Length: 123
Image (tube, rainbow, N blue to C red; front, side, top):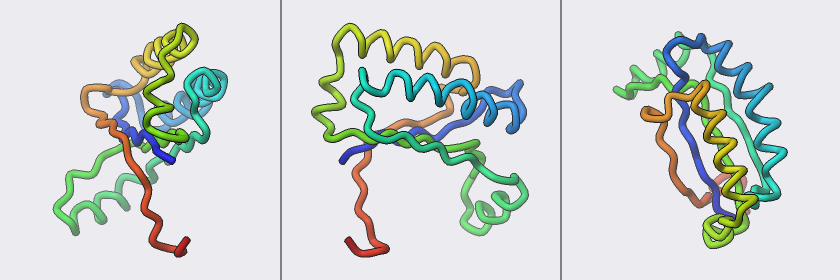
């Protein structure tokens, strides 16, 4: 399995609560609806918790912190993910990106391909 990891910053005019509600209640159903066209096998949203707890954790490491959440999208393989380029996949990608522009600060939100290497529990 391969996945896309998307570290999200909200748009500056949104509170964290507004951002998370939009992401969970509007965007998640869109992803679910278009998952077959894009070959998405699994989709997980990790919503950041209270800023004060995160500030202590980030400060102890000298990290800037500050993400509002992380999205993970699983695919069978990198080749399969990249092969999803037909008309349905292109339209699905366009719809998702259009929606993301409504609540995600895309310029500040890194996205990358990753492969998991589970440590605990051992596989």
